[in-house]
Length: 289
Image (cartoon, rainbow, N blue to C red; front, top):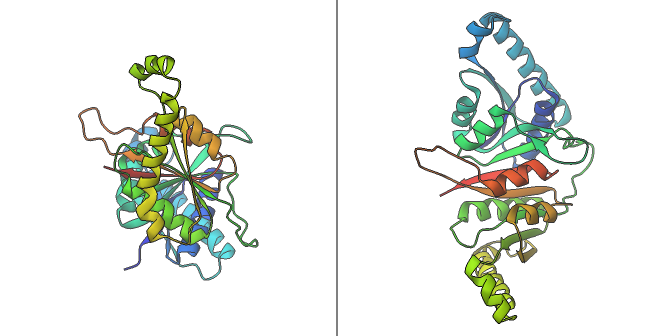
């Protein structure tokens, strides 16, 4: 069975833009698109604005409109719908289990920068293990135009295994036939700050060592995807800030989310948060151990 692309819709302009972007992704991957709406069942009796029948009817109409829109834009696209009931974040995460990509809409913080994550999107990202894309309203592909992908940016952590992140990034770059820019940001440990005063060359040595480690980390994927042009940058600074700066003209940004197994629950981490809130391009968050 072919994997599919799943997108969550809720009637907002953000979700409609997400559905269109997801449709282009499904067409690019040559897989079906599944459009999902989740009726928040526990809230319906409390809020009494709409009874269950009315809520289901509204959801069915939204799904009908969404699937008609993407089929009109992408002829031949295999697209279906599903109406679910439950907590939206949990339902979307469960629905995406057998998908290759989950797509969510995200409201912009203005005309040029950033995402504003709602509670559903944030909760879904921390619950899902499928790669999840956040799409802004302005990221609304025109099906009449042939996509010309400029480049893809991926954040790389050389200190822990991030195979899933690199697998996804290289495969997407190969699929789009575009260059891949790998970024790793580093900073001096507190103890080394004193060493730098005594030895001005220490920082240069660390830079060379980090660059070498980054190249070593990318080497297996360079061999596996020889046609993907790759640039690698190791830069001293805050990882979130450097990724946002590197993503200025990117078509897609890929970051990792370390799966956290603790009583404190799941989290996204400061770097992923920074990228999601300040990058204008679609952002894919890939969960990894």
